[in-house]
Image (cartoon, rainbow, N blue to C red; front, side, top):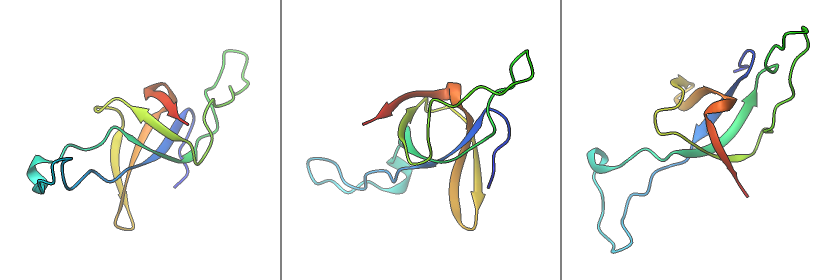
Length: 93
């Protein structure tokens, strides 16, 4: 999948299935994690002069994002998030 413009594709990390105390969580109690790995980048934001801005992210970066960021898309039974680079809050090092 190749995003357009300033959009990126992120694969969300798997959520924890057990708590620190060893309690197994059912699917209904799991929160979707707000972190993932950048899979693909668009062409960059179109600037007023017609050029494209470079991304601050790169494919493979682990990132934190808002829990309401992006649109969920499923491709080949894998769930991805399609979001703008601005929706990313931080890069996890």
